[in-house]
Length: 265
Image 1 (cartoon, rainbow, N blue to C red):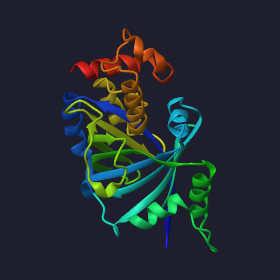
Image 2 (cartoon, helix red, strand yellow; image 1 turned 135 degrees about the vertical axis):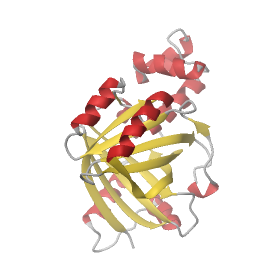
Image 3 (tube, rainbow, N blue to C red; image 1 turned 30 degrees about the horizontal axis):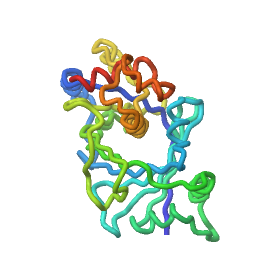
Protein backbone atom coordinates (compact mmCIF):
# COMPACT_ATOMS: atom_id res chain seq x y z
CA UNK A 1 0.00 0.00 0.00
CA UNK A 2 1.25 3.48 -0.85
CA UNK A 3 0.86 6.55 1.31
CA UNK A 4 1.02 10.04 -0.13
CA UNK A 5 2.22 13.48 0.88
CA UNK A 6 2.07 16.81 -0.96
CA UNK A 7 3.16 20.37 -0.26
CA UNK A 8 4.34 23.57 -1.94
CA UNK A 9 6.97 26.18 -1.02
CA UNK A 10 9.62 28.54 -2.35
CA UNK A 11 13.15 27.14 -2.45
CA UNK A 12 16.37 29.06 -3.06
CA UNK A 13 19.77 27.44 -3.43
CA UNK A 14 23.17 28.90 -2.58
CA UNK A 15 26.69 27.59 -3.22
CA UNK A 16 28.89 28.18 -0.16
CA UNK A 17 32.65 28.04 0.06
CA UNK A 18 34.18 26.88 3.36
CA UNK A 19 34.69 30.39 4.77
CA UNK A 20 31.17 31.54 3.92
CA UNK A 21 29.74 28.42 5.51
CA UNK A 22 31.71 28.92 8.73
CA UNK A 23 30.45 32.48 9.25
CA UNK A 24 26.88 31.78 8.16
CA UNK A 25 26.54 28.61 10.23
CA UNK A 26 27.53 30.47 13.39
CA UNK A 27 24.56 32.81 12.88
CA UNK A 28 22.19 30.05 11.83
CA UNK A 29 22.89 28.28 15.13
CA UNK A 30 21.61 31.34 17.01
CA UNK A 31 18.24 31.42 15.28
CA UNK A 32 17.56 27.87 14.09
CA UNK A 33 17.32 24.48 15.78
CA UNK A 34 18.25 21.11 14.25
CA UNK A 35 15.37 18.97 13.09
CA UNK A 36 14.70 15.67 14.85
CA UNK A 37 16.71 13.61 12.36
CA UNK A 38 19.97 15.52 12.70
CA UNK A 39 22.35 14.75 9.85
CA UNK A 40 20.91 12.35 7.29
CA UNK A 41 22.34 10.62 4.23
CA UNK A 42 19.87 11.05 1.40
CA UNK A 43 20.14 8.61 -1.49
CA UNK A 44 18.36 9.16 -4.82
CA UNK A 45 17.88 7.53 -8.18
CA UNK A 46 16.79 10.04 -10.83
CA UNK A 47 14.70 8.71 -13.70
CA UNK A 48 14.62 10.08 -17.22
CA UNK A 49 13.83 9.15 -20.80
CA UNK A 50 16.46 7.59 -23.09
CA UNK A 51 16.98 11.09 -24.54
CA UNK A 52 17.32 12.72 -21.08
CA UNK A 53 14.26 14.84 -21.73
CA UNK A 54 13.56 15.79 -18.11
CA UNK A 55 17.06 16.95 -17.22
CA UNK A 56 17.60 18.88 -20.46
CA UNK A 57 14.28 20.66 -20.00
CA UNK A 58 15.31 21.53 -16.46
CA UNK A 59 18.63 22.96 -17.63
CA UNK A 60 16.78 25.27 -20.02
CA UNK A 61 15.13 26.81 -16.90
CA UNK A 62 11.58 26.92 -18.26
CA UNK A 63 8.68 28.34 -16.27
CA UNK A 64 7.60 24.73 -15.60
CA UNK A 65 9.78 21.67 -15.02
CA UNK A 66 9.51 18.36 -13.21
CA UNK A 67 11.66 15.49 -11.95
CA UNK A 68 10.96 11.89 -11.01
CA UNK A 69 13.14 10.25 -8.39
CA UNK A 70 13.30 7.35 -5.96
CA UNK A 71 14.59 8.37 -2.51
CA UNK A 72 15.67 6.64 0.67
CA UNK A 73 17.21 7.93 3.87
CA UNK A 74 20.37 5.90 4.19
CA UNK A 75 21.39 2.88 2.12
CA UNK A 76 18.27 0.72 1.89
CA UNK A 77 17.50 -2.96 2.14
CA UNK A 78 14.64 -4.65 0.30
CA UNK A 79 12.08 -3.69 2.95
CA UNK A 80 13.38 -0.18 3.74
CA UNK A 81 10.82 2.58 3.26
CA UNK A 82 11.40 4.34 -0.05
CA UNK A 83 9.73 7.40 -1.54
CA UNK A 84 8.65 7.87 -5.14
CA UNK A 85 8.68 11.60 -5.70
CA UNK A 86 7.54 13.95 -8.43
CA UNK A 87 9.01 17.39 -7.90
CA UNK A 88 7.59 20.20 -10.00
CA UNK A 89 8.59 23.82 -10.19
CA UNK A 90 6.22 26.37 -11.68
CA UNK A 91 6.95 30.09 -11.67
CA UNK A 92 9.56 29.64 -8.89
CA UNK A 93 7.18 27.74 -6.60
CA UNK A 94 8.06 24.12 -5.78
CA UNK A 95 5.35 21.48 -5.57
CA UNK A 96 6.20 18.00 -4.36
CA UNK A 97 4.11 14.85 -4.51
CA UNK A 98 5.36 11.62 -3.01
CA UNK A 99 4.23 8.18 -1.97
CA UNK A 100 6.10 5.63 0.11
CA UNK A 101 6.36 1.86 0.22
CA UNK A 102 9.09 -0.81 0.67
CA UNK A 103 12.09 -0.29 -1.61
CA UNK A 104 11.59 -3.30 -3.89
CA UNK A 105 7.89 -2.43 -4.30
CA UNK A 106 8.81 1.15 -5.20
CA UNK A 107 11.21 0.01 -7.93
CA UNK A 108 8.53 -2.27 -9.40
CA UNK A 109 5.95 0.51 -9.16
CA UNK A 110 8.04 2.84 -11.32
CA UNK A 111 8.81 0.08 -13.81
CA UNK A 112 5.12 -0.74 -14.18
CA UNK A 113 2.58 1.36 -12.26
CA UNK A 114 -0.19 -0.95 -11.06
CA UNK A 115 -3.78 -0.28 -12.02
CA UNK A 116 -5.90 -0.26 -8.90
CA UNK A 117 -9.26 0.99 -7.76
CA UNK A 118 -9.46 3.66 -5.10
CA UNK A 119 -6.03 5.17 -5.80
CA UNK A 120 -5.39 8.52 -4.11
CA UNK A 121 -5.01 11.75 -6.06
CA UNK A 122 -1.28 11.77 -5.32
CA UNK A 123 -0.95 8.18 -6.57
CA UNK A 124 -2.69 9.17 -9.78
CA UNK A 125 -0.47 12.22 -10.31
CA UNK A 126 2.74 10.24 -9.85
CA UNK A 127 1.57 7.39 -12.09
CA UNK A 128 0.52 9.92 -14.72
CA UNK A 129 4.06 11.34 -14.85
CA UNK A 130 5.59 7.85 -15.06
CA UNK A 131 3.29 6.88 -17.93
CA UNK A 132 3.71 10.20 -19.73
CA UNK A 133 7.40 9.56 -20.52
CA UNK A 134 7.83 6.36 -22.58
CA UNK A 135 10.95 4.40 -21.73
CA UNK A 136 11.61 6.25 -18.49
CA UNK A 137 14.42 4.50 -16.63
CA UNK A 138 17.09 5.05 -13.95
CA UNK A 139 19.78 7.48 -15.14
CA UNK A 140 21.70 8.91 -12.17
CA UNK A 141 22.53 8.02 -8.58
CA UNK A 142 23.01 11.05 -6.33
CA UNK A 143 23.57 11.04 -2.57
CA UNK A 144 24.59 13.64 -0.01
CA UNK A 145 24.76 14.29 3.70
CA UNK A 146 22.09 16.77 4.75
CA UNK A 147 21.84 18.81 7.95
CA UNK A 148 18.42 20.38 8.41
CA UNK A 149 17.34 23.24 10.68
CA UNK A 150 14.03 24.91 11.54
CA UNK A 151 13.58 28.58 12.41
CA UNK A 152 12.86 29.04 16.13
CA UNK A 153 10.00 31.43 15.44
CA UNK A 154 8.21 29.22 12.90
CA UNK A 155 8.80 25.72 11.59
CA UNK A 156 7.61 26.86 8.15
CA UNK A 157 11.10 28.27 7.48
CA UNK A 158 13.77 25.64 6.97
CA UNK A 159 17.47 25.68 6.07
CA UNK A 160 19.42 22.67 4.86
CA UNK A 161 23.11 22.16 4.12
CA UNK A 162 24.19 19.43 1.70
CA UNK A 163 27.75 18.18 1.60
CA UNK A 164 29.62 15.16 0.24
CA UNK A 165 27.45 15.29 -2.87
CA UNK A 166 28.22 12.12 -4.81
CA UNK A 167 27.04 10.89 -8.21
CA UNK A 168 27.36 8.00 -10.60
CA UNK A 169 25.65 6.91 -13.83
CA UNK A 170 26.13 3.18 -13.30
CA UNK A 171 25.07 0.65 -10.62
CA UNK A 172 21.70 2.40 -10.35
CA UNK A 173 20.39 0.51 -7.34
CA UNK A 174 20.34 2.28 -3.97
CA UNK A 175 21.04 -1.02 -2.18
CA UNK A 176 24.54 -1.11 -3.70
CA UNK A 177 25.76 1.64 -1.38
CA UNK A 178 26.82 5.26 -1.36
CA UNK A 179 29.80 5.75 -3.64
CA UNK A 180 30.74 7.63 -6.78
CA UNK A 181 32.37 10.92 -7.72
CA UNK A 182 32.13 14.26 -5.94
CA UNK A 183 30.17 17.07 -7.58
CA UNK A 184 31.83 19.88 -5.58
CA UNK A 185 35.31 20.73 -4.31
CA UNK A 186 36.08 19.62 -0.77
CA UNK A 187 34.47 21.83 1.85
CA UNK A 188 31.87 23.35 -0.47
CA UNK A 189 28.16 23.01 0.37
CA UNK A 190 24.79 23.64 -1.15
CA UNK A 191 22.44 25.54 1.14
CA UNK A 192 18.71 25.48 0.49
CA UNK A 193 16.42 28.04 2.07
CA UNK A 194 12.83 26.80 2.10
CA UNK A 195 10.15 29.32 2.97
CA UNK A 196 6.39 29.71 2.43
CA UNK A 197 6.86 33.35 1.40
CA UNK A 198 9.91 35.46 2.37
CA UNK A 199 13.07 34.93 4.43
CA UNK A 200 13.75 36.80 7.70
CA UNK A 201 15.25 40.24 7.06
CA UNK A 202 18.35 39.57 9.17
CA UNK A 203 19.12 36.46 7.13
CA UNK A 204 18.68 38.23 3.81
CA UNK A 205 21.07 40.97 4.96
CA UNK A 206 23.65 38.45 6.17
CA UNK A 207 23.62 36.62 2.85
CA UNK A 208 24.14 39.92 1.04
CA UNK A 209 27.01 40.94 3.35
CA UNK A 210 28.73 37.59 2.74
CA UNK A 211 28.17 37.89 -1.02
CA UNK A 212 26.13 34.70 -1.02
CA UNK A 213 23.68 34.86 -3.91
CA UNK A 214 21.01 32.48 -5.21
CA UNK A 215 22.17 29.94 -7.78
CA UNK A 216 20.30 27.63 -10.12
CA UNK A 217 22.61 24.74 -9.14
CA UNK A 218 20.94 21.40 -9.82
CA UNK A 219 22.59 18.22 -8.55
CA UNK A 220 21.26 16.03 -11.33
CA UNK A 221 21.78 18.79 -13.89
CA UNK A 222 25.41 19.16 -12.85
CA UNK A 223 25.91 15.39 -13.00
CA UNK A 224 24.46 15.35 -16.52
CA UNK A 225 26.67 18.24 -17.68
CA UNK A 226 29.74 16.56 -16.21
CA UNK A 227 28.89 13.35 -18.04
CA UNK A 228 28.46 15.23 -21.33
CA UNK A 229 31.71 17.13 -20.89
CA UNK A 230 33.58 13.87 -20.44
CA UNK A 231 31.99 12.40 -23.54
CA UNK A 232 33.64 15.16 -25.57
CA UNK A 233 36.95 14.85 -23.70
CA UNK A 234 36.53 18.14 -21.82
CA UNK A 235 38.61 17.11 -18.83
CA UNK A 236 39.12 20.74 -17.79
CA UNK A 237 36.09 22.83 -18.58
CA UNK A 238 36.90 26.31 -19.82
CA UNK A 239 35.87 28.70 -22.58
CA UNK A 240 39.16 27.87 -24.34
CA UNK A 241 38.33 24.17 -24.64
CA UNK A 242 36.96 23.57 -28.17
CA UNK A 243 35.44 20.21 -27.23
CA UNK A 244 33.16 21.87 -24.72
CA UNK A 245 31.58 23.96 -27.45
CA UNK A 246 29.95 20.80 -28.82
CA UNK A 247 27.60 20.91 -25.82
CA UNK A 248 27.92 24.62 -24.98
CA UNK A 249 24.19 25.21 -25.34
CA UNK A 250 23.80 23.42 -22.00
CA UNK A 251 26.00 25.89 -20.13
CA UNK A 252 25.89 29.58 -19.34
CA UNK A 253 29.16 31.51 -19.46
CA UNK A 254 29.02 31.79 -15.69
CA UNK A 255 28.69 28.03 -15.34
CA UNK A 256 31.60 27.40 -17.68
CA UNK A 257 33.82 29.76 -15.70
CA UNK A 258 32.66 28.20 -12.42
CA UNK A 259 33.44 24.71 -13.68
CA UNK A 260 36.88 25.86 -14.79
CA UNK A 261 37.54 27.31 -11.34
CA UNK A 262 36.34 24.19 -9.60
CA UNK A 263 38.40 21.88 -11.81
CA UNK A 264 41.60 23.78 -11.11
CA UNK A 265 41.19 24.14 -7.35
